[in-house]
Image 1 (tube, rainbow, N blue to C red):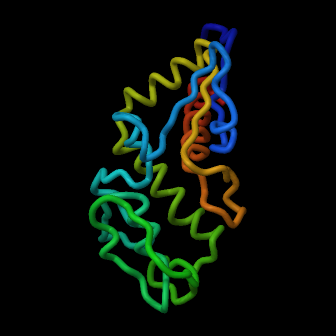
Image 2: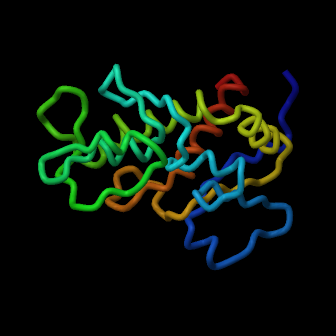
Length: 184
């Protein structure tokens, strides 16, 4: 195997930092929000890819990751599977948790992110996003080109009670693929 001289791992950039500065020379900032130009908009959880398995519901699919997340939220004692259809959109109200499978126990935020949101997003990256785009990012990393990915959120921690930046999940996925290529 050839020796990698200039690997530049993909990095997450909180949106607040995007607003404060511009990219230094040689650094690529990549918007993967719903405001991104095609084809990068397909990384947004709102994007209606279609056919995404709903975690905990083996016979159901949804059009978007956000649709799954909002549809499984329990608000006023009810889920809203109608959100599984179409482009992902926010649901009004304060959730008491997320429904997962046939369990009567609701998942808290962190467990819901681990069992619902992250698996649905990763599945979408593996099965619905154009692999050529992912391969461009990985190729740039091996060429030593610094890439910072962002969306419209600042939170890259699943345990923090703020909206989770999907750009962080994308970065983790890309770096995992880089590690697999390296044999690690």
